[in-house]
Length: 478
Image 1 (cartoon, rainbow, N blue to C red):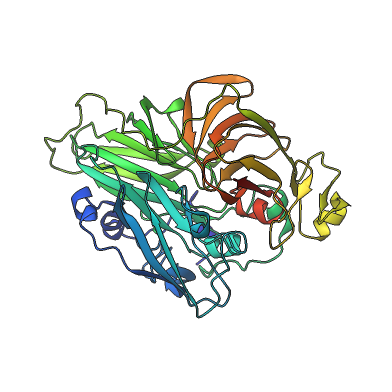
Image 2 (cartoon, rainbow, N blue to C red; image 1 turned 30 degrees about the vertical axis):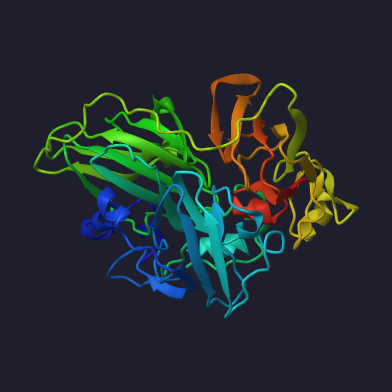
Protein backbone atom coordinates (compact mmCIF):
# COMPACT_ATOMS: atom_id res chain seq x y z
CA UNK A 1 0.00 0.00 0.00
CA UNK A 2 1.41 3.38 -1.01
CA UNK A 3 0.98 6.72 0.67
CA UNK A 4 -0.68 8.10 -2.44
CA UNK A 5 -3.69 5.92 -1.69
CA UNK A 6 -4.23 7.78 1.57
CA UNK A 7 -3.95 11.22 0.04
CA UNK A 8 -7.18 13.25 0.34
CA UNK A 9 -6.86 14.29 -3.30
CA UNK A 10 -7.12 10.62 -4.36
CA UNK A 11 -9.32 8.85 -1.84
CA UNK A 12 -9.20 5.36 -3.34
CA UNK A 13 -9.36 3.42 -0.07
CA UNK A 14 -11.75 4.52 2.64
CA UNK A 15 -13.26 3.30 5.86
CA UNK A 16 -16.85 2.17 5.97
CA UNK A 17 -19.28 4.98 6.64
CA UNK A 18 -20.97 3.49 9.69
CA UNK A 19 -18.21 4.36 12.14
CA UNK A 20 -17.92 7.89 10.81
CA UNK A 21 -21.65 8.53 11.12
CA UNK A 22 -21.71 7.25 14.69
CA UNK A 23 -18.79 9.49 15.63
CA UNK A 24 -20.18 12.63 14.03
CA UNK A 25 -23.92 12.54 14.42
CA UNK A 26 -24.59 12.62 18.15
CA UNK A 27 -27.86 14.44 18.97
CA UNK A 28 -27.77 17.45 21.26
CA UNK A 29 -29.89 15.75 23.92
CA UNK A 30 -27.52 12.82 24.22
CA UNK A 31 -24.44 15.01 24.47
CA UNK A 32 -25.95 17.31 27.05
CA UNK A 33 -26.61 14.38 29.37
CA UNK A 34 -23.18 12.83 28.92
CA UNK A 35 -20.88 12.23 31.85
CA UNK A 36 -17.70 14.25 31.42
CA UNK A 37 -14.54 12.42 32.51
CA UNK A 38 -12.89 13.56 35.73
CA UNK A 39 -9.42 13.22 34.22
CA UNK A 40 -7.59 13.30 30.91
CA UNK A 41 -4.71 10.88 30.46
CA UNK A 42 -2.14 11.87 27.82
CA UNK A 43 -0.42 8.71 26.60
CA UNK A 44 0.78 6.87 23.49
CA UNK A 45 -1.74 4.60 21.77
CA UNK A 46 -2.73 3.57 18.25
CA UNK A 47 -5.68 4.53 16.06
CA UNK A 48 -7.00 3.31 12.68
CA UNK A 49 -6.76 6.73 11.05
CA UNK A 50 -6.63 5.47 7.49
CA UNK A 51 -8.17 2.01 7.20
CA UNK A 52 -9.96 -0.27 9.62
CA UNK A 53 -8.22 -3.26 8.01
CA UNK A 54 -4.84 -1.59 7.54
CA UNK A 55 -1.99 -0.81 9.92
CA UNK A 56 -3.03 1.35 12.88
CA UNK A 57 -1.19 4.63 13.31
CA UNK A 58 0.89 5.15 16.46
CA UNK A 59 -0.40 8.38 17.99
CA UNK A 60 -0.48 10.34 21.23
CA UNK A 61 -3.98 10.79 22.59
CA UNK A 62 -6.13 11.76 25.52
CA UNK A 63 -7.89 8.75 27.09
CA UNK A 64 -6.87 6.62 24.08
CA UNK A 65 -9.19 8.59 21.78
CA UNK A 66 -8.48 10.60 18.61
CA UNK A 67 -9.73 13.26 19.06
CA UNK A 68 -9.81 13.22 22.85
CA UNK A 69 -13.04 12.99 24.85
CA UNK A 70 -15.69 15.52 23.90
CA UNK A 71 -16.17 17.71 26.98
CA UNK A 72 -19.58 19.35 27.27
CA UNK A 73 -20.80 21.79 29.91
CA UNK A 74 -23.35 24.55 30.41
CA UNK A 75 -22.44 28.22 30.51
CA UNK A 76 -21.65 29.12 34.11
CA UNK A 77 -20.50 25.61 35.05
CA UNK A 78 -17.09 25.02 36.60
CA UNK A 79 -14.69 22.72 34.76
CA UNK A 80 -12.71 20.44 37.08
CA UNK A 81 -10.27 18.04 35.44
CA UNK A 82 -7.09 16.25 36.43
CA UNK A 83 -4.53 15.74 33.67
CA UNK A 84 -2.19 12.76 33.98
CA UNK A 85 0.98 12.82 31.89
CA UNK A 86 2.05 9.38 30.67
CA UNK A 87 4.14 10.71 27.81
CA UNK A 88 7.91 10.70 27.47
CA UNK A 89 8.07 14.51 27.72
CA UNK A 90 6.33 17.23 29.75
CA UNK A 91 2.95 18.54 28.65
CA UNK A 92 0.17 21.02 29.51
CA UNK A 93 -3.36 21.78 28.33
CA UNK A 94 -4.38 25.11 26.84
CA UNK A 95 -8.14 25.70 26.70
CA UNK A 96 -8.25 27.43 23.35
CA UNK A 97 -10.57 30.43 23.22
CA UNK A 98 -11.68 30.24 26.85
CA UNK A 99 -11.11 33.28 29.05
CA UNK A 100 -9.57 31.60 32.08
CA UNK A 101 -7.38 32.75 35.00
CA UNK A 102 -3.76 32.93 33.90
CA UNK A 103 -2.73 29.99 36.09
CA UNK A 104 -5.11 27.74 34.12
CA UNK A 105 -3.98 28.81 30.62
CA UNK A 106 -1.51 25.98 30.08
CA UNK A 107 1.51 27.81 28.63
CA UNK A 108 4.63 26.19 30.12
CA UNK A 109 6.68 28.44 32.42
CA UNK A 110 4.55 31.46 31.49
CA UNK A 111 1.28 30.23 33.05
CA UNK A 112 2.31 27.07 34.89
CA UNK A 113 5.15 24.65 35.37
CA UNK A 114 4.88 21.94 32.72
CA UNK A 115 3.40 18.65 33.85
CA UNK A 116 6.36 16.28 34.06
CA UNK A 117 6.09 12.64 32.93
CA UNK A 118 4.28 10.67 35.62
CA UNK A 119 2.83 13.82 37.21
CA UNK A 120 -0.73 15.21 37.48
CA UNK A 121 -2.10 18.76 37.27
CA UNK A 122 -5.57 19.89 38.36
CA UNK A 123 -7.39 22.41 36.15
CA UNK A 124 -10.39 24.25 37.58
CA UNK A 125 -12.14 27.37 36.27
CA UNK A 126 -15.54 28.86 35.55
CA UNK A 127 -16.89 28.65 31.99
CA UNK A 128 -17.92 32.25 31.35
CA UNK A 129 -18.63 31.98 27.63
CA UNK A 130 -20.89 29.67 25.64
CA UNK A 131 -19.61 28.38 22.32
CA UNK A 132 -17.39 25.96 20.46
CA UNK A 133 -13.87 25.63 21.87
CA UNK A 134 -11.11 23.03 21.98
CA UNK A 135 -8.14 21.93 24.06
CA UNK A 136 -4.55 21.01 23.22
CA UNK A 137 -1.03 21.04 24.72
CA UNK A 138 1.24 24.07 24.64
CA UNK A 139 4.47 22.19 25.32
CA UNK A 140 6.26 21.22 22.09
CA UNK A 141 2.86 21.89 20.58
CA UNK A 142 3.85 21.25 16.96
CA UNK A 143 4.77 17.68 17.85
CA UNK A 144 2.18 16.98 20.53
CA UNK A 145 -0.79 18.38 18.59
CA UNK A 146 0.58 16.87 15.39
CA UNK A 147 0.60 13.44 17.03
CA UNK A 148 -3.05 13.68 18.02
CA UNK A 149 -3.34 15.45 21.40
CA UNK A 150 -6.45 17.61 21.02
CA UNK A 151 -10.14 17.48 21.80
CA UNK A 152 -13.43 19.37 21.63
CA UNK A 153 -14.91 21.46 24.43
CA UNK A 154 -18.47 22.73 24.00
CA UNK A 155 -20.13 25.15 26.38
CA UNK A 156 -23.87 25.14 25.71
CA UNK A 157 -25.92 28.31 25.90
CA UNK A 158 -28.29 28.46 28.84
CA UNK A 159 -31.06 28.28 26.23
CA UNK A 160 -29.62 26.42 23.19
CA UNK A 161 -30.88 27.22 19.73
CA UNK A 162 -33.48 24.75 18.40
CA UNK A 163 -32.10 22.34 15.80
CA UNK A 164 -32.74 18.72 14.90
CA UNK A 165 -29.11 17.70 15.45
CA UNK A 166 -26.03 19.34 16.93
CA UNK A 167 -22.89 17.98 15.25
CA UNK A 168 -19.13 18.54 15.60
CA UNK A 169 -16.57 18.11 12.84
CA UNK A 170 -13.03 18.39 14.17
CA UNK A 171 -10.87 18.91 11.08
CA UNK A 172 -7.26 17.77 11.16
CA UNK A 173 -4.47 16.60 8.91
CA UNK A 174 -1.63 14.15 9.38
CA UNK A 175 1.70 13.64 7.68
CA UNK A 176 1.95 9.88 7.27
CA UNK A 177 4.50 7.63 5.57
CA UNK A 178 3.73 4.64 3.34
CA UNK A 179 3.15 2.47 6.41
CA UNK A 180 0.47 4.83 7.79
CA UNK A 181 2.84 6.05 10.52
CA UNK A 182 3.41 9.69 11.46
CA UNK A 183 6.51 11.10 9.79
CA UNK A 184 8.97 11.87 12.63
CA UNK A 185 9.14 15.37 14.02
CA UNK A 186 12.41 17.23 14.18
CA UNK A 187 14.14 20.36 12.99
CA UNK A 188 12.51 21.11 9.65
CA UNK A 189 13.25 24.67 8.65
CA UNK A 190 11.35 24.32 5.40
CA UNK A 191 8.12 23.75 7.30
CA UNK A 192 9.03 26.40 9.86
CA UNK A 193 9.89 29.07 7.29
CA UNK A 194 7.16 28.30 4.74
CA UNK A 195 3.52 27.43 5.49
CA UNK A 196 4.02 24.97 8.34
CA UNK A 197 3.71 21.20 8.60
CA UNK A 198 0.94 20.32 6.14
CA UNK A 199 -0.31 16.75 6.24
CA UNK A 200 -1.12 14.40 3.38
CA UNK A 201 -4.17 12.82 5.07
CA UNK A 202 -7.20 14.85 6.16
CA UNK A 203 -9.56 13.50 8.82
CA UNK A 204 -12.85 14.54 10.35
CA UNK A 205 -13.06 13.42 13.98
CA UNK A 206 -10.07 11.14 13.38
CA UNK A 207 -11.71 9.41 10.41
CA UNK A 208 -11.42 9.59 6.62
CA UNK A 209 -14.84 8.03 5.91
CA UNK A 210 -16.57 9.95 3.14
CA UNK A 211 -20.27 9.47 3.82
CA UNK A 212 -22.33 11.39 6.35
CA UNK A 213 -26.05 10.58 6.49
CA UNK A 214 -28.58 13.41 6.65
CA UNK A 215 -32.34 13.60 6.18
CA UNK A 216 -34.36 15.94 3.98
CA UNK A 217 -36.17 18.42 6.17
CA UNK A 218 -33.78 18.53 9.10
CA UNK A 219 -31.90 21.54 10.43
CA UNK A 220 -28.32 20.91 11.61
CA UNK A 221 -26.02 22.91 13.81
CA UNK A 222 -22.58 22.03 12.50
CA UNK A 223 -19.63 23.08 14.66
CA UNK A 224 -16.41 23.21 12.63
CA UNK A 225 -13.04 23.17 14.45
CA UNK A 226 -9.69 23.41 12.68
CA UNK A 227 -7.24 21.43 14.83
CA UNK A 228 -4.55 21.12 12.15
CA UNK A 229 -1.02 22.35 12.82
CA UNK A 230 -1.00 24.64 9.80
CA UNK A 231 -3.68 23.84 7.21
CA UNK A 232 -6.41 26.33 6.29
CA UNK A 233 -9.76 24.88 5.23
CA UNK A 234 -12.24 26.53 2.86
CA UNK A 235 -15.31 24.28 2.73
CA UNK A 236 -18.02 24.61 0.11
CA UNK A 237 -21.37 22.90 0.71
CA UNK A 238 -22.31 22.61 -2.95
CA UNK A 239 -26.11 22.98 -3.28
CA UNK A 240 -26.80 24.03 0.34
CA UNK A 241 -26.85 27.53 1.81
CA UNK A 242 -25.52 27.43 5.38
CA UNK A 243 -25.96 30.28 7.85
CA UNK A 244 -22.98 31.33 9.96
CA UNK A 245 -24.12 31.94 13.55
CA UNK A 246 -20.86 32.03 15.53
CA UNK A 247 -17.13 32.53 14.98
CA UNK A 248 -14.57 31.25 17.49
CA UNK A 249 -17.46 30.57 19.85
CA UNK A 250 -18.90 34.10 19.76
CA UNK A 251 -22.28 34.93 18.19
CA UNK A 252 -22.72 37.02 15.07
CA UNK A 253 -25.82 38.18 13.27
CA UNK A 254 -26.69 35.12 11.13
CA UNK A 255 -25.32 35.53 7.62
CA UNK A 256 -24.83 33.33 4.58
CA UNK A 257 -21.31 32.05 3.94
CA UNK A 258 -19.06 34.62 2.29
CA UNK A 259 -18.17 33.42 -1.23
CA UNK A 260 -20.03 30.17 -0.38
CA UNK A 261 -17.02 28.98 1.63
CA UNK A 262 -16.44 28.28 5.31
CA UNK A 263 -12.85 29.50 5.75
CA UNK A 264 -11.01 28.41 8.90
CA UNK A 265 -7.37 29.13 9.59
CA UNK A 266 -5.52 26.91 12.03
CA UNK A 267 -7.32 26.90 15.44
CA UNK A 268 -10.41 28.81 14.23
CA UNK A 269 -13.99 27.64 14.72
CA UNK A 270 -17.26 28.31 12.92
CA UNK A 271 -20.83 27.33 13.84
CA UNK A 272 -23.22 26.82 10.92
CA UNK A 273 -26.94 26.24 10.62
CA UNK A 274 -27.65 24.01 7.62
CA UNK A 275 -31.14 23.24 6.34
CA UNK A 276 -31.09 19.94 4.46
CA UNK A 277 -33.10 20.45 1.30
CA UNK A 278 -33.46 18.06 -1.61
CA UNK A 279 -34.94 14.60 -2.02
CA UNK A 280 -34.08 11.20 -0.51
CA UNK A 281 -30.96 9.81 -2.15
CA UNK A 282 -29.56 13.21 -3.15
CA UNK A 283 -25.89 13.85 -2.42
CA UNK A 284 -24.16 17.10 -1.47
CA UNK A 285 -20.41 17.24 -1.87
CA UNK A 286 -18.46 19.14 0.79
CA UNK A 287 -15.37 20.35 -1.07
CA UNK A 288 -12.23 21.87 0.43
CA UNK A 289 -11.04 24.62 -1.93
CA UNK A 290 -8.43 26.27 0.31
CA UNK A 291 -5.56 25.52 -2.09
CA UNK A 292 -7.33 26.45 -5.31
CA UNK A 293 -9.19 24.48 -7.99
CA UNK A 294 -6.23 22.28 -8.90
CA UNK A 295 -5.98 20.92 -5.36
CA UNK A 296 -9.65 20.87 -4.39
CA UNK A 297 -10.89 17.56 -2.97
CA UNK A 298 -14.04 16.06 -1.54
CA UNK A 299 -14.00 16.09 2.25
CA UNK A 300 -17.46 14.58 2.82
CA UNK A 301 -20.61 13.52 1.03
CA UNK A 302 -23.88 14.45 2.70
CA UNK A 303 -26.19 11.63 1.62
CA UNK A 304 -29.95 12.05 2.12
CA UNK A 305 -31.63 9.10 3.75
CA UNK A 306 -34.68 7.37 2.30
CA UNK A 307 -37.07 9.08 4.71
CA UNK A 308 -37.77 12.80 4.82
CA UNK A 309 -38.30 14.37 8.23
CA UNK A 310 -40.80 16.97 9.32
CA UNK A 311 -37.91 18.79 10.92
CA UNK A 312 -37.00 22.41 11.38
CA UNK A 313 -35.56 23.05 7.91
CA UNK A 314 -37.29 25.85 6.09
CA UNK A 315 -38.21 27.71 9.24
CA UNK A 316 -37.28 31.39 9.49
CA UNK A 317 -33.60 32.25 9.57
CA UNK A 318 -31.97 31.46 12.91
CA UNK A 319 -32.06 34.11 15.61
CA UNK A 320 -28.84 35.58 16.93
CA UNK A 321 -27.43 33.68 19.87
CA UNK A 322 -27.08 35.54 23.19
CA UNK A 323 -23.83 37.50 23.40
CA UNK A 324 -21.12 36.30 25.76
CA UNK A 325 -20.13 38.60 28.66
CA UNK A 326 -17.06 40.00 26.89
CA UNK A 327 -16.05 43.55 27.78
CA UNK A 328 -16.72 45.96 24.91
CA UNK A 329 -13.71 48.18 24.12
CA UNK A 330 -14.13 51.94 24.13
CA UNK A 331 -12.62 53.02 20.84
CA UNK A 332 -12.51 56.69 21.73
CA UNK A 333 -9.48 56.99 23.98
CA UNK A 334 -8.26 53.47 23.22
CA UNK A 335 -4.48 53.19 23.19
CA UNK A 336 -2.92 52.03 19.92
CA UNK A 337 -0.14 49.46 19.64
CA UNK A 338 1.54 48.26 16.47
CA UNK A 339 2.43 44.59 15.93
CA UNK A 340 4.39 43.89 12.75
CA UNK A 341 5.03 40.29 11.73
CA UNK A 342 8.06 39.65 9.52
CA UNK A 343 10.27 36.85 8.27
CA UNK A 344 9.87 33.51 6.58
CA UNK A 345 10.96 32.28 3.18
CA UNK A 346 10.95 34.91 0.46
CA UNK A 347 10.60 37.58 3.13
CA UNK A 348 12.46 40.86 3.51
CA UNK A 349 13.53 40.47 7.14
CA UNK A 350 17.30 40.94 7.39
CA UNK A 351 17.51 39.99 11.05
CA UNK A 352 15.95 40.44 14.49
CA UNK A 353 16.82 40.67 18.18
CA UNK A 354 16.87 37.55 20.37
CA UNK A 355 18.03 37.49 24.01
CA UNK A 356 19.01 41.15 23.69
CA UNK A 357 21.33 40.58 20.72
CA UNK A 358 20.71 41.31 17.04
CA UNK A 359 21.13 38.29 14.78
CA UNK A 360 21.12 38.18 10.99
CA UNK A 361 18.49 36.02 9.31
CA UNK A 362 21.17 33.41 8.58
CA UNK A 363 22.17 33.33 12.26
CA UNK A 364 18.51 33.08 13.28
CA UNK A 365 17.90 30.15 10.96
CA UNK A 366 20.87 28.38 12.53
CA UNK A 367 19.03 28.82 15.84
CA UNK A 368 15.83 27.41 14.36
CA UNK A 369 14.17 30.83 14.10
CA UNK A 370 12.63 32.49 11.05
CA UNK A 371 10.00 35.01 12.23
CA UNK A 372 9.73 38.09 14.44
CA UNK A 373 7.19 40.47 15.98
CA UNK A 374 8.31 44.10 15.93
CA UNK A 375 11.84 42.89 15.26
CA UNK A 376 11.92 40.66 18.35
CA UNK A 377 12.24 36.88 18.64
CA UNK A 378 11.41 35.22 21.99
CA UNK A 379 13.88 32.97 23.73
CA UNK A 380 13.19 29.27 23.56
CA UNK A 381 11.79 28.73 27.03
CA UNK A 382 10.32 31.54 29.07
CA UNK A 383 9.09 34.10 26.49
CA UNK A 384 10.40 36.78 28.86
CA UNK A 385 10.47 39.71 29.15
CA UNK A 386 6.92 40.62 27.99
CA UNK A 387 6.98 42.51 24.72
CA UNK A 388 3.78 44.44 25.39
CA UNK A 389 2.65 45.82 28.78
CA UNK A 390 -1.02 46.79 29.10
CA UNK A 391 -2.95 48.54 31.87
CA UNK A 392 -5.75 46.57 33.50
CA UNK A 393 -9.15 47.85 32.36
CA UNK A 394 -7.77 49.94 29.48
CA UNK A 395 -9.07 49.54 25.91
CA UNK A 396 -6.49 48.87 23.21
CA UNK A 397 -6.43 48.81 19.43
CA UNK A 398 -3.70 46.58 18.04
CA UNK A 399 -2.67 47.42 14.48
CA UNK A 400 -1.52 44.11 13.01
CA UNK A 401 0.55 44.03 9.85
CA UNK A 402 1.65 40.89 8.02
CA UNK A 403 4.83 41.78 6.10
CA UNK A 404 5.33 38.22 4.85
CA UNK A 405 4.22 36.18 1.85
CA UNK A 406 2.46 33.62 4.08
CA UNK A 407 -0.82 33.70 5.96
CA UNK A 408 -0.83 33.76 9.76
CA UNK A 409 -3.72 32.94 12.13
CA UNK A 410 -2.83 35.24 15.04
CA UNK A 411 -4.20 34.06 18.40
CA UNK A 412 -4.42 35.97 21.70
CA UNK A 413 -4.66 34.07 24.98
CA UNK A 414 -6.88 35.13 27.88
CA UNK A 415 -8.99 37.60 25.91
CA UNK A 416 -11.42 37.86 23.02
CA UNK A 417 -11.15 40.80 20.64
CA UNK A 418 -13.16 42.65 18.03
CA UNK A 419 -11.90 42.73 14.46
CA UNK A 420 -12.46 46.33 13.35
CA UNK A 421 -10.92 46.56 9.88
CA UNK A 422 -8.97 44.83 7.14
CA UNK A 423 -6.57 46.73 4.89
CA UNK A 424 -8.04 50.03 6.01
CA UNK A 425 -11.66 49.03 5.30
CA UNK A 426 -13.86 49.02 8.37
CA UNK A 427 -16.07 46.02 8.94
CA UNK A 428 -19.78 46.79 8.81
CA UNK A 429 -20.14 45.03 12.15
CA UNK A 430 -17.15 44.32 14.43
CA UNK A 431 -16.69 40.56 14.87
CA UNK A 432 -15.57 39.05 18.18
CA UNK A 433 -12.95 36.30 17.86
CA UNK A 434 -9.80 34.98 19.52
CA UNK A 435 -7.88 34.32 16.27
CA UNK A 436 -7.61 36.52 13.19
CA UNK A 437 -6.38 35.03 9.90
CA UNK A 438 -3.99 37.53 8.32
CA UNK A 439 -3.44 37.07 4.61
CA UNK A 440 -0.04 37.87 3.05
CA UNK A 441 0.71 41.60 3.20
CA UNK A 442 -2.59 42.22 4.99
CA UNK A 443 -3.26 44.76 7.75
CA UNK A 444 -5.98 44.43 10.35
CA UNK A 445 -7.12 46.30 13.46
CA UNK A 446 -8.32 44.41 16.54
CA UNK A 447 -9.65 45.96 19.76
CA UNK A 448 -10.15 44.57 23.26
CA UNK A 449 -10.25 45.50 26.92
CA UNK A 450 -7.21 44.33 28.88
CA UNK A 451 -9.37 42.92 31.67
CA UNK A 452 -7.60 39.66 32.50
CA UNK A 453 -4.41 40.22 34.53
CA UNK A 454 -1.32 38.14 33.86
CA UNK A 455 1.13 37.22 31.11
CA UNK A 456 -0.56 36.02 27.92
CA UNK A 457 0.84 34.44 24.79
CA UNK A 458 0.19 36.26 21.50
CA UNK A 459 1.26 34.09 18.58
CA UNK A 460 0.73 32.60 15.16
CA UNK A 461 -1.25 29.37 15.45
CA UNK A 462 0.64 27.75 12.62
CA UNK A 463 2.49 25.84 15.29
CA UNK A 464 5.76 25.64 13.37
CA UNK A 465 5.72 29.43 12.96
CA UNK A 466 5.20 29.85 16.69
CA UNK A 467 8.14 27.62 17.56
CA UNK A 468 10.28 29.43 14.97
CA UNK A 469 9.75 32.84 16.53
CA UNK A 470 6.30 34.26 15.73
CA UNK A 471 5.27 34.56 19.37
CA UNK A 472 5.31 37.30 21.96
CA UNK A 473 3.90 38.00 25.42
CA UNK A 474 1.32 40.56 26.45
CA UNK A 475 1.34 41.36 30.17
CA UNK A 476 -1.74 42.94 31.73
CA UNK A 477 -0.73 44.67 34.94
CA UNK A 478 -2.65 46.32 37.78
